Length: 144
Image (cartoon, rainbow, N blue to C red):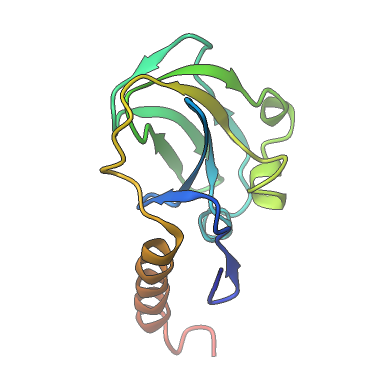
């Protein structure tokens, strides 16, 4: 699905913090949405957790830094990190270039499968469209 020119693949779930979650059996692959990667231009550094590290739902588990800010990525549910994308340590810009492909952040084993913090693509599209329109309205006239 496309929202205001940004892709939101139908087979993923989404969190409010511009995070996507791909589920396969008891494993979740986690990354930043195309809208989120556009809003956080020029990622220059990532902090990744250690394999085996456990996190509760909504607990910060990774972060990335731009030239202007630091943003945290929260756990969608109770999970244990099984793999991190170590390529990001050398090239964090992959998150900006290919957020749904080579720019994935980590994989985690699901310890408690609660989807309270996740939205399907239809709900996410509406949520992110509203955010986009509010931002567009907020900055109306600046870029015209």
